[in-house]
Amino acid sequence: MICGTDEAGRGPIAGPVVAAAVILDPARPIVGINDSKKLTAKKREALSQEIKEKALYWAIAQCEADEIDAINILQASLLAMQRAVEALPIAPANVLVDGNRLPKLQVPALAVIGGDALHDCIGAASILAKVERDRQMCAWHELYPLYEFATHKAYPTPAHLALLQQHGACPIHRRSFKPVKRILGELD
Image (cartoon, rainbow, N blue to C red; front, side, top):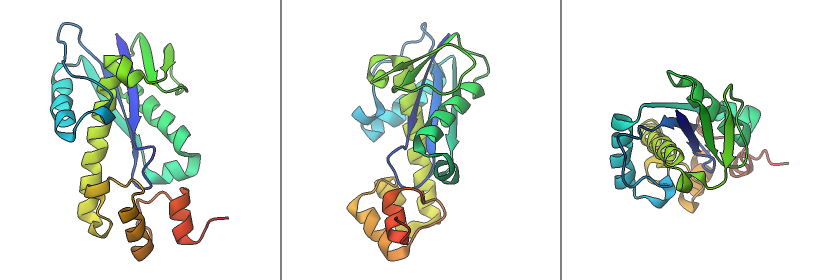
């Protein structure tokens, strides 16, 4: 019962940071799991569905933009991973966490730098988190089409920054992030 956990959405300037926790079934292997950033969107979608069907357990959790602004992106990422692990219907024996920091967990855990490419359970969590966050950004695009979230997923691309400059921040922008603060005129 080894769980992998990872997050998606630390770099964007809007929307939540999303984490997933996955306990894979050794009897039902999944081919092609890797760091979500190394996969195409189409491959991530297909693997996400397969992971949800074949994993023993999985859960997704997140921290919203206002939480990120209140506690910072690192702490929000760790909290989202903690929430994902705690949302599993059983407590895992061990948790492998992508990165160099550990969330607060009630079970033994190990931080693994580059773990999403090294351990399938972390890679699976990476995929679920990325697919869910991208899905949410497409939904936010419907509410705030002026920002074109479906295109850039809220990363600070030149196009996104130009739209932010033109329209100001919307409710899901992370006001503690420098590009948003700069455009809002709140940079110290």
